[in-house]
Amino acid sequence: MGAMNLDKNKRSLRGEISVPGDKSISHRSVMFGALANGITKVENFLPGDDCLSTISCFRQLGVEIEQEGSRVVVFGKGFEGLSEPEGILDVGNSGTTIRLLMGILSGRPFHSVLMGDHSIGKRPMTRVTKPLSLMGANISGRKEGEYTPLSISGQQLNSIEYKLPVASAQVKSAIILAGLQAEGETTIIEPEKTRDHTERMIRQFGGEVTTNGLAVSVRGGQSLTAANVSVPGDISSAAFFLAAGAIIPDSKIILKNVGLNPTRTGILDVLTAMGADITIEPYQTESGEPAGDITVAFSTLKGTVVEGSLIPRLIDEIPIIALIATQADGITVIKDAAELKVKETNRIDTVVAELAKLGARLEATEDGMIIYGNTFLKGGEAVSSHGDHRIGMMLAIGALLCTKDVSLEQAEAISVSYPSFFDDLQKLF
Ligand code: SPQ
Image (tube, rainbow, N blue to C red; front, side):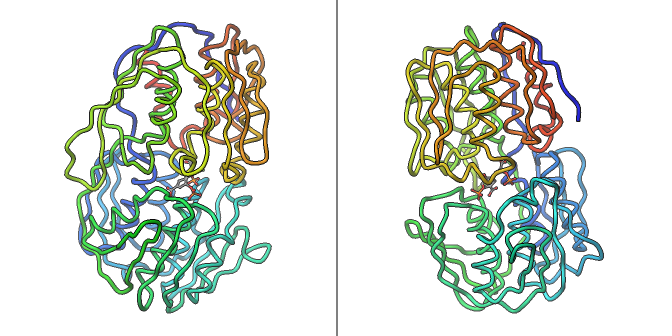
């Protein structure tokens, strides 16, 4: 595994960048492009490892897809256009790919096997297999369907009404994708509102989905029509530069064309509550997803509490919020975030262990962490992403505050969601 030496650097970051396309929307653009009838053109697609895994799985399922950098063309032939793959579908490191594919493949009349890397092999799947089995799906896997490899024998599905035990857009989306193939209307009730890119994209592709508070319903047997998708920049990637701009003295960063879907903007609410200097200029967008420019400048921050319905709106930003909190006045408490334990790594443990190596003072709790502010980060010790892209980028930003050099091990994991991360960082020096 490669290690990257991060310059000790107290220089400010200034300038303008466009972060790459949103990962969640990029995955879904390929999936819905494949499930729709006609030619779907995608612009600003994220060519990160995870989304490339989605493309390769759909190619194995018989879908013709052209990809050159951030331009993708999908030649969709409807749900019926998918055919039995000859080999195992390899999702790499991508939880979104495997969980959404489970919903799609449960209703297809063929056999398929799904697996991914070491991290995917440890992520829970019963949360998806259970509702899909209630719909009639036939899925088996290690430890009674909890872990990969998963084997799916497609079946005719029936609709269900299902109360989600955890707030998860992936589980919701898997059930919606199965529901589109089921007889009757499927309803999912969420404990908290999660990202709604799947619902928005169904509408963009001419389908119908209704939402009523925390309930989402979809009718089976709908056919979808190809659409052109322009993917906004990923706010979860922008978050690393929002943090850098807010905590590195004398910085000012403009982030162009960032997705501003309200189910994803919790990081902006937290930064605002902490007293950050942030300006948002929304665009008038015609696509199903709002976007705009964000400017962030250094300012004094104060600690905050992050909890409840805010958590699903910033779940992937918690590692970087922990770093921001080390530089704020007072204490920051993160609660109701036990889901962090089942991400690419146990993000409570990895954040606490790796940030502590930089000199941060923080402790893990059952469902989050407590971070003590006003901390001097010194560096000097090697840190590791543990193969988790978000931990890697958080540590790279943290290293910029350190007085001693920091060596980042397993830095290559960053290409899962942000292959051009270090190039963009360089532009701001
Ligand atoms: O795809 P994957 O590996 O699960 O990626 C992560 C990430 O940090 O990029 C989570 F580890 O994002 C998930 C996110 O946490 C992407 C996602 C989606 O596109 O629907 C939803 C969230 O997961 P969940 O489990 O809450 O549904």
